[in-house]
Image (cartoon, rainbow, N blue to C red):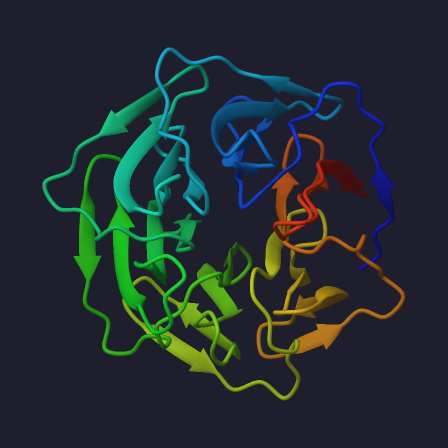
Length: 303
């Protein structure tokens, strides 16, 4: 795998922020960015932006989720809509609402059953089983130990809790992706804030979680960026953050082990958001700076 990263010189871009939510919308061919927290005077945000491969454009909606950070966002292919769940609002309240983006507007969805409020949870579309999988997260902002490891699926209308025999330990800020070549969801790392981090690798097969015993593995970190590169048919792991560092390494998953890619350097991104742009067959990286002192809004494209 080889990848050249090019920073985009843009006149119109989302304001600098951190802890935004990003997903690729196959129905419109746009990368969708929502919310996060801006600098002094901006606070928590609830704006919606679309990346068309050349520029960002803000998309106005008659309704929208409340301003928040660390919401889970993913595209549900069967319904052709993006789903948003949870996050943390400006008052520090952890949220448990579900919203749908149809390409033009946000609509809140009610479900007979729903996951408990949480932030920083995994949300990934399982193509083989045609549902979204929600895993883990944290339910109290900034507290040590208040983390989840439950698993839920969204079928386009309702949430249903799953009862797997095994599951990763409670955690948030976990890297996750659907591995199309093997028809399974992969989650890596994450962990309790202020405590230990994990570097383990788990597989969801639609019924159960199973830990993968790997010889090599990326080092401990939060917010690892995982994508499935359709061009190379590989799961690729980019960067992520530790408590005091930003990683710039790249790894590839071969189905049994992680293989580091030497000579492939990610822009120093801190806590960033990354998606695979299917229409243009490239990777879009939105660099947000990652901490309270250093908010940025850089857009990089990897080809």
